[in-house]
Length: 264
Image (cartoon, rainbow, N blue to C red; front, side):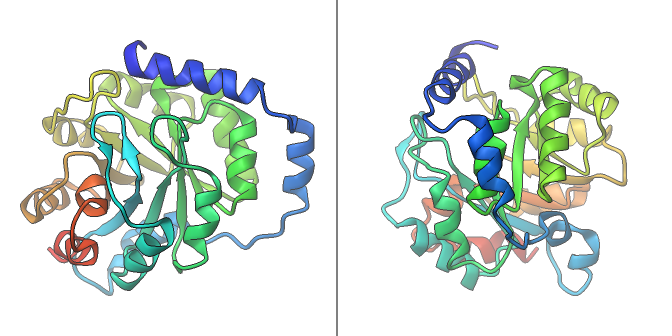
């Protein structure tokens, strides 16, 4: 792990260590929250798609990125309303603050205007972050295997499930896929074809890795999804859902883009 990933994990560790609210207080705050979670897993399931054509779309709310800078001038709530009207199956909210200009508080803003499940997308390395997502109404969290030890992966996965949240486990290689399947078999796996160190894209990885994902696991394709043709190819390859960020958030007509990718 080096370059961007190393930089962001270093920042995360320092940032979490400086929090004024300690883990014990965060746990107590979480225990007082009684929020009915919306099922991220069910929204992406094959059963949910039986009554409609196409593929499930997880539309991402992403303010900025290190490679592109500012992505959209629309507010969090504006995008949430648009995604709701376009019937996105779930919404991913990028909560990382320094490099992507997000915040866990954005989760609540989205849930106030969007009726489906909301995923907390961040570089999660600690229990503190999982509890923070829970407190801010996340229905699911993202765990990136590339930044987690085997022990931390299992610990954070189990914690999220104990709190009633689903987990999307992200892998970037065959090695990472093998590791998560042996350590704790996920219910949902996301294959990200973007190298988080260099930001280079390898679209072929989507087709290479899906062959080794068990049939009973929901499969999500991430990154490099810009066209209807690409969405159709990924559906034919066996993916249940697409997580799409910049091509939707930066579009002049985000709702139209969602429908374009969804109805294939």
